[in-house]
Length: 91
Figure 1 (cartoon, rainbow, N blue to C red):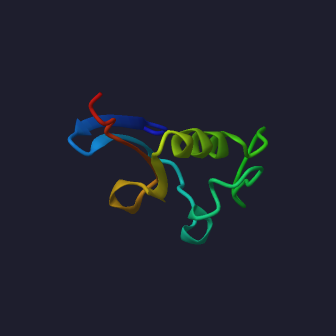
Figure 2 (cartoon, rainbow, N blue to C red):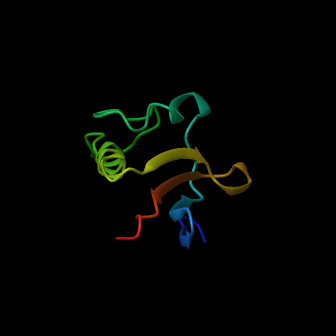
Figure 3 (cartoon, one colour):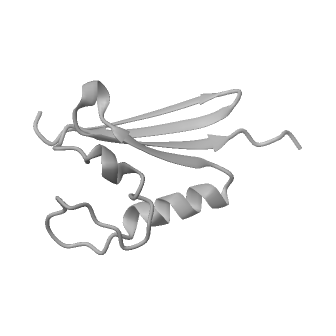
C-alpha cells in the first residue's frame, strides 16, 4: 500500500534490534550520514518540521549504549532506520 510503514523488533543474545521502514521516495545516499544532526532536513523535506526527530532518537539511543543507522529501504526503495540496543548484563 502507498505510504506503508513496517516495523520489526527482534531480540537475541547481543541485544534488541528495531527496524522501521517505509516505501516512500527515500533519502539520497549522500544525505543518510547527516540525518542524526540537529536541525538537519533533507533537500526533499516537505511540510512542517524542524529537523529534531531523528536527532532525539539518536541521542536517546546512544545514551543507552545503542546505535542508530539510516539506510535505503528494503530492495533499495524507501527509507529505513535501524536502532540497536545491547543486551543488559545480568545483575
